[in-house]
Image (cartoon, rainbow, N blue to C red; front, side, top):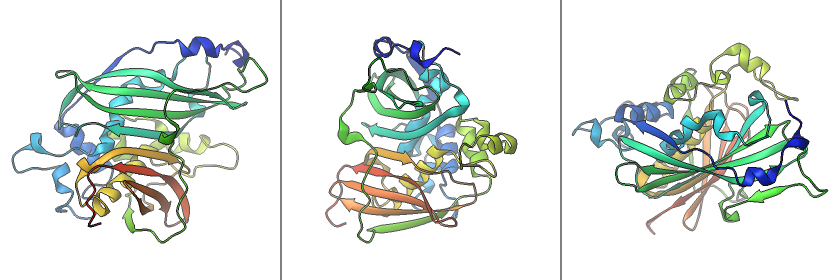
Length: 313
């Protein structure tokens, strides 16, 4: 493996990522919905049944806004490859996710993705890499959504060419998922228990990392004082649970009110644990924090931008 000092960040900034494609059907949208807890406690939930069934046929089902995160899966780990930047994929951590939604996602679609570098930061022993993906409907050319994925690459830092650590950002700072949690009482709180098989169900949507299914891989995947006693839930699955809570409690079941989603992954979740999502309204944004009830630990925080929120709330 090449040393970090051989990596030239200037070349990375000019790197052109290959475009990618992704196609999905109504079945994929419904399977994803089940994977993030839709109808988990009530198979005929009047608010959520529309994500898996419609009386006019599967082509009429609604698609959850966080389904947008699946559109970038085809890039996989290769999507984080920059010329000369060497890292161990086993040491990659998914730190943050930011999504912008420009149109409601159709129940089935052929997607064309344009990928670019949104950020690169030298943190000494690690590097932070931010990849932005804009997803277009191939037939119409309409821009549907944008994902910005932030990953923490342990062991890939130390490439700065001067005493000042290298740092590059190519997006507005107000899109940072880090938020200050209000000290006031939450506007709403929603509790949802995941199932022991939740990660096995969610992985069928395309994220087959064995960390979420293989007990032996999970036990050796931790670092420092953090050790996993069993496979953990996907961070994006937890994000799906949190945004579902906001749709139910704040948006009155209307997923089309979601304009943007920002999430910062703070700690792991074990399948079978109970997720408690607290929500605060701040103008057209919902600040949220998700905790694991059994361990009393915060696992996720961020905000959701809304469009057309009624004043009656």
